[in-house]
Length: 280
Image (cartoon, rainbow, N blue to C red):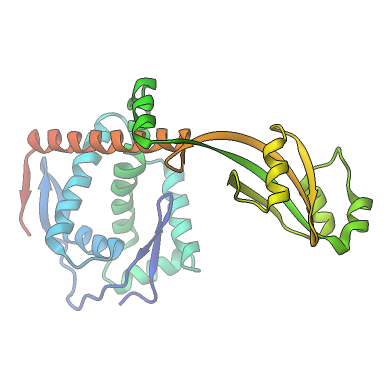
């Protein structure tokens, strides 16, 4: 049984769920893709890695990963030793242990560090490697973006601001420390208060501050006050949003959709042109 929960880090953090195996692992071939084997140890590692006991679905996932791995290695891509070492260190750090601790946990499950390295190599290439490749190949045209903007609906404006809120009782101290040539971040540290970075629409701030923020130009520093607080704000930028999403967010959403479609098409082509055998 894995003590606690392993974690994997491949750009984000996913739980390596504890799964118990009572039988001794026999590293037999459970499937092959173009004569390259998927082993029982790969299945067991996948169960830990993805937190699933659904053997059939997992083997299908491993087959897809192998198809992508073979395709990408055929294109000259590979996982660098530096990335592999960094990933292993991140796994250990996330679990508050070291590499020796990971080896001990694997040993309890009948697995080795080599099993983990082999699994991670395929996983990293089939995820990060494929993403890097598709990001170079898939483009979003201006025409596609304009169509996406129309689908998203009504335009509204938002402003990105830095905001410092100071209690009025600290007004005299604020006057002494305020430097019009300095940054709000430096002023916040000197005052011992938090600097907020906000993305706001019209009418979302208290009235006196809202008026100032929407009257000021981009890059301008403004001051406003009410009965309780003094507000210092700097307008960093302004952008259009449609359906609550900025133009860049719309572009990224469209890019993600196109990349997922390209991945699906690629897997269908690879399956069609490959020899896959499931032994189980």
